[in-house]
Amino acid sequence: MNILITGAFGFVGTNLSEAIKRADWKSTLIAIDVQETKNYAYDEYYSWEELAKVDWTKIDAIIHLAGKAHDTKNNADEKVYFSINVGLTKKIVGHFKESNASKFIFFSSVKAVADTVDGEILTEEYLPNPKTAYGKSKLEAEKYILNQQLPENKKVYILRPCMIHGPGNKGNLNLLYKLVQKGIPWPLGSFENERSFTSINNLSFIIERLLQDNVEQGIYQVADDQTLSTNKLIQLIAEARGGKPTILHFNKNMLSSVARFGDLLHLPLNSERLKKLTESYVVSNDKIKKTLKINTLPETATEGMKKTLTSFS
Image (cartoon, rainbow, N blue to C red):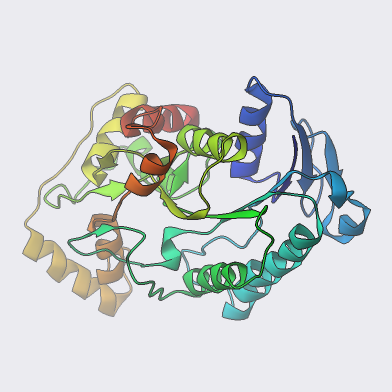
């Protein structure tokens, strides 16, 4: 199988390509990215300016990872998100339509649906209402793909993963890790929340099944089977460092007052940050498991998180 992957040298592309090469089925991997890196698992590389050089008649599947990631500091221009997340999608979908590829896997995000999930479990039936430029651009890309008229032999899979993590990850988990590393007590222990994550191993397992099996096309959320609270994360980080966590349980009302005070004085703890650190965001993965006819994913949430956190040290 000849598989073309855009955004090939990012965190997901690097891990996914290595997982495919480790599998027991033969494949040729073609990388598309801004620039070439060293020591990769791909067989061929092309820049975005060299798409015309790709032999699209020999491509069996396309995995579109390339895009602009969510800027947690909200410094990026909204036009940049649409230019990259929608613009590149239109370009690669055009090649998919003309190619002999039978499968197109698009990486969207749960943020294309909702920025917050209050008291509910996010499912594929949830009416999308993104608030950020990142989420809006991903939803716009989804709509473009779904509006294409494709032959019956071509299938499209839109994946909406929640936060993906694994060895080599550079996401928000690093911030919590550094806090514990510095010996700073976690002051928000009185807040109990539940959050969904996606381990790179579970994600790779799902991608391999989509590539190999005759899976019904559609929109699928991707998440680990279990959720983890922020307090549990602090505990796992401490254990990964060979220590014990220091979790303080201050009064919630007092912390909320401090956060509002932080809004006025631009302190590190403000209302927005308190909400992000303590809110729940639970994502259902029932649809993808039912479609793949499995009861559980290969790796538990705790197992995957331990591997990620251990890699930080």
